[in-house]
Length: 130
Image 1 (cartoon, rainbow, N blue to C red):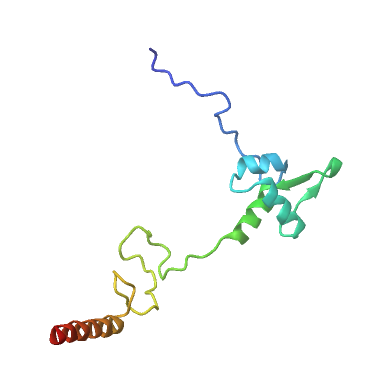
Image 2 (tube, rainbow, N blue to C red; image 1 turned 90 degrees about the horizontal axis):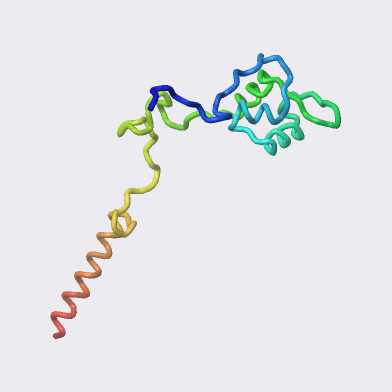
């Protein structure tokens, strides 16, 4: 067994073309796999991405224009400190505005107290009559 590593056919990732060179939709999807042909079509129809019409009504893009479109799709982190990892215990998330609830029932502490009093009165009432 040789120590040489063999690559699968087609596994090599080709280098990106220059950012200002026109490339086909298929190439855009290859170099920017977050996109699909459907997303590119929707962005084109909504006039959100710059493109060039080729022969037989094909669409051609530059990676610079594709990257500019992708920048408009970025959404900011809603936490107080977006630089920190969300896997940390104290990640800067905003506290919940909901009233504190019981883990078991989802009731507020006041509701739990009322139910407890009503239940105690019912139990005590049964003892007196029995």
